[in-house]
Image (cartoon, rainbow, N blue to C red):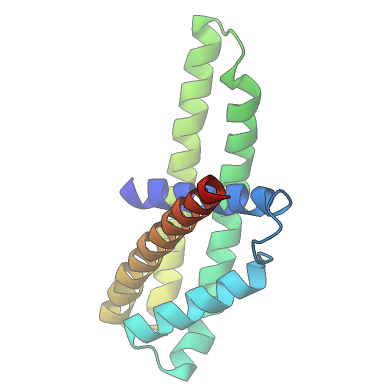
Length: 158
């Protein structure tokens, strides 16, 4: 559950960052490829993956991320569309269950890909990858928060 929330928060932050780029001239261009390259390098280093292990692992890793993103994107669309609408109790119940179903589907995907990861990495390496992924997300959120704080300070001084 925590992992799902972290991933969801990460994608939300990425989306906010990407949309804000058009509004801020000073901000460097956000590239999904650059993000994946940084994520790959970080995880490879922190988890101690060999080049061969990384080559076998990351196509699976990014495939899972893409599938989870698609599931969550559809849920986010529903959430945005229904956020400000008045809903009946039955509609709210359906919405709540739909959101829970998305979490279940994400968990099923994670389980499926864990089995795939274990075909190319040892269990201890998979564990290290999981910790490295969480660490990467925390570091990213920290940097984004610092960047936003610094940008806010600069605006105040202008």
